[in-house]
Length: 276
Image 1 (cartoon, rainbow, N blue to C red):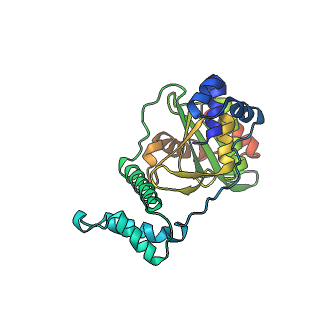
Image 2 (spheres, helix red, strand yellow):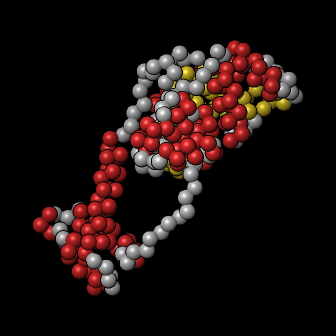
Image 3 (cartoon, rainbow, N blue to C red):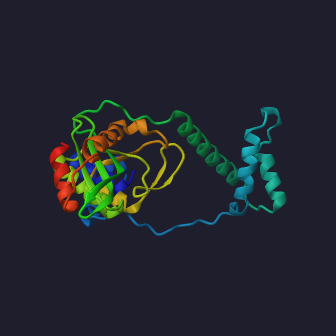
């Protein structure tokens, strides 16, 4: 979760004082005031890279640690033995540096195993104002003189089941932001969470478990509206089952045998008035 987005949400939405935010984050009050006043979405820090004598041997040591972890305890080589082997290869650093590297490596392995085995589930019962679900669908309608493929943004409030559609020619960031702007205003507020699949306009890379590399422009939008973003596990459409059903229902209720529309503005005016 992006730190500045959380700071803005705590201060503006949850009305926490700067002192409380400072205590929670460990940042100074001066730094928090600067972030809030600047309006920036993400802090920029200069890249820092401390050179270590172990760097040229990190790949080799990782391979050895992985191999030893899979061995029987009696056959497993100790870190002192691994350190001696690295010295033979030309490593000039201390045993303590190897031990610290091994601790970090094992911690990363434990975290990865926990994420893979534990899984994350999105609840199917929601409190008022807790969450909304969003998804795109592809549908067809006659717009002007021709049949046009539509990219339809579906918004649905998880508690009340109120929903709204917005149609576009493409699934670009501009269309995504416009859909959020129109739908959140029409639905009367901003829930605390938005639930999405791993669409390309939001996620640049899907990692293990719930790790995501979030697109910078999508992250800026989330920070602007001050809600949290949750992403479904790959191939787990049931985690946003409300909006999946909404897509199917809209296909038969709205787009099947729909009349011709003068333009996209007329189409969106029509669906806005019939789908709430």
